[in-house]
Length: 165
View (cartoon, rainbow, N blue to C red):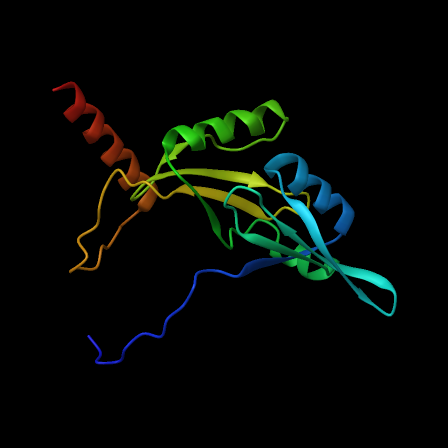
């Protein structure tokens, strides 16, 4: 451990994604996740970015018009948006399914539950991960996870067996 004292930080200010069509992405984040438009950015009178806020705890989201970078970033999961607990995550999954969105459903993950494989109109993977954990890591040791998907499945089976027994 270092003697360095970590500076005070206040969480994530906003996330920024490159998009091919600002209004299409705006409509998707508004209709799927409840985001609201609060800022429009222009260069020489042309709209080239927007800022969306979430009314119920989600991170602020910046969308920047940059079709080339949007194509290059498609498919990668840059972040996971926190959700309180498993039941809230399941409700979100149901809502997205009802809206016709494809995703992998709620899955056990290393520490909590995850809803992966939701993609926005540009193909960015938007993941959700519970803040509530089913497994608490030892804060004194580094948790090393070999093959995280398989490890999460084994942990879920062990928790189910323990709950029954």
